[in-house]
Amino acid sequence: MDMEIRDRFDAIRSDNVVEHLRDPVSYLAALVKLLKPGGSLRVFVPNGDALSAMLLGRYSYVYWLPFHLNYFTPKTLRVAMERAGLRHPECLVYNPVGSWTHSQRQLLLSPGFDQRSSSLLDRAIRKSWLMNYPVETGAQWLRLGEEVVGTGLSPA
Image 1: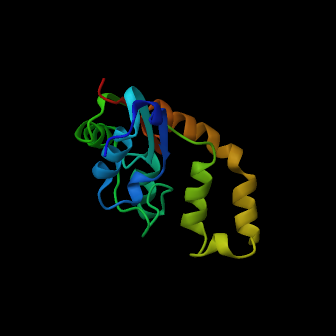
Image 2: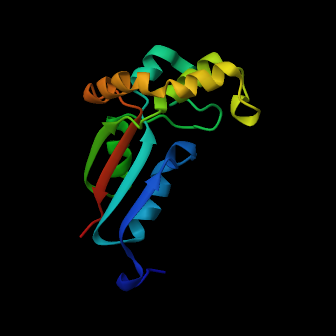
Image 3: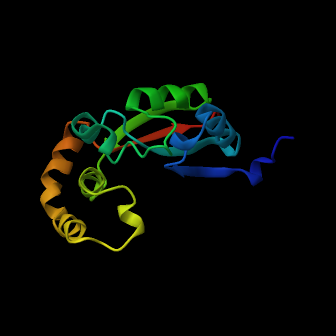
């Protein structure tokens, strides 16, 4: 059953969801059906091409194993959005402040670090987050940031 136009949305944001799904294109297509004609969908996913993924591998903020089932790049997210029926999909890369701190915690601390009391090393890593800012900014300028943001329009 089709929704009435008045029951649809002008814009929808999906923030760090599709990387957890077995069929991300079907999910995106379902969101497109919820948009008004010309409505906007914005999708946030971890960037499989991130600098931290290249340098740290499975310890990167991007590779949240075993919960991420899909890894996107700007190109593959754009393709998924096109296949879901979005028009004019565009993708950009950015780096959330603190993402490198999370990667360092994954690399240097034992599994479950976020489920127990902070160790001295964990507190030191978290307090030194500002030292990561130049790396995070440089990665973003190089389009190697931790997140991909895709925006597309529903069919008119």
